[in-house]
Length: 64
Image (cartoon, rainbow, N blue to C red; front, side, top):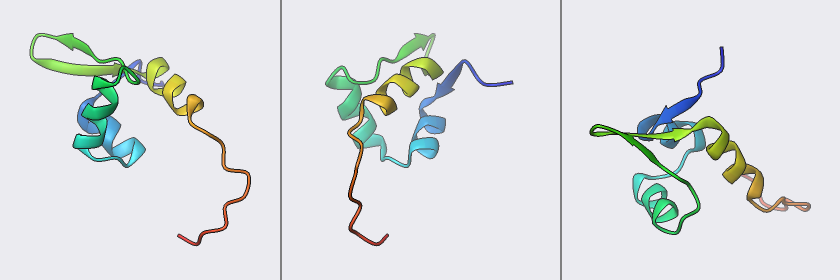
């Protein structure tokens, strides 16, 4: 079963971004965060929407 929400730590691990970058994206309004008590969550659909909004690279010339 697919999760409906992810913790901040899960988002960082899934996407591979730093906590600083994550909170900068939240502050910019790019990733909405929900609060339950002291816990912060990102809805799976919101994370997917943000990922889908990122630009598509058509010519990936770099080696990683």
